[in-house]
Amino acid sequence: MPDRSWIESDHPLYVFDDEGRFVQRGLDERESVVISDRLPRYSRHDQSSDRRWLLYNADAVTLFDLRTGASRALTVPEERPIAGVDNYGWRSFSPDSRWLSVGFDLYELPTNRWTAIDQPPAELLAGLDRFVTAYWSADGNSLFIKGFDDANDPVFLEYSPIPNGRWRSVESPDDQGQLPTLVREGVEIELARDAHPESHSLYPERRTSDGRRTAKVDDEFRLVVTSAGGPSFTAATGRYDECEGVTIGIHGWVEDRYLLYSIGNVPYVSDAQTGKQALLFDEETKFPLFFW
Figure 1 (cartoon, rainbow, N blue to C red):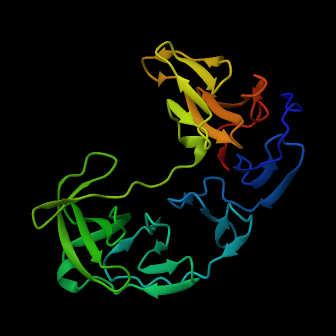
Figure 2: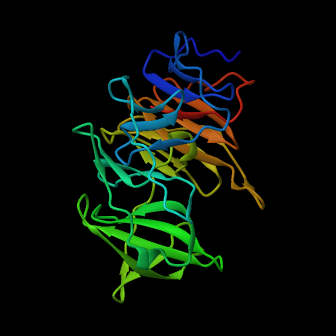
Figure 3: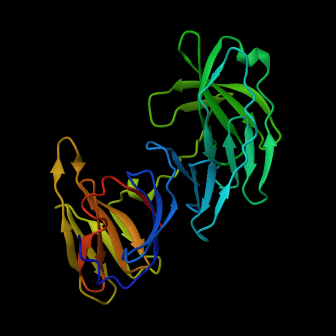
């Protein structure tokens, strides 16, 4: 078991492990609390853009507040199927973290209220075979749903403005990247990018919130930590792999002192004050999703 006794912080780390559990543990892992042990093995997890809210499935669709540690089970309205159109279900946070779209319903997080979205009119559904996912515009004023028609060609519909809008079709000249290219009346629409858990977000450089410390992966794949008015040190060294690319990356800082980073798929914690470091998890823990 890695020695993390030198960590002087019990800052909460929230972990989805490979045993189907959602666990809160201290950064030092001296104490841990199982929040839920009823998650499906391949349960989906979504995070709001402001990184405050987590959405996951246990016995119910559950919203978890990372700021307060409180859980909120959502009573999702009964699904309203469209005849002849398969709905694979979608849920997505708006970029301002105010709304959560779940199928044809909107949940407003500040008020804990649901608003039903009118289903698309019949003329927009003609030839449609299935819905698969949803996107938000970067300004949060529009919700887009992606489907496929009987010829397996993509179809995009826009609902705007939120929350009481109307449906119309939009064009998509390119649907090959991570986000599709959508065009409305000849103008390209900027789409919001989903937030990713800290465990799946890797950066070449991260600065502490007070600006006094910086972690950066240099041209020789060394992870160098520098402090204002203090010495720098190399926390770790990665490499470049033709298949994997750069094998070292930074997740972020905890309490402006502890640096979390990964080499390959293995996360580590380093103390910028003392230079000590250790595995963030026990060796038997494989590919955990974690947040803080």
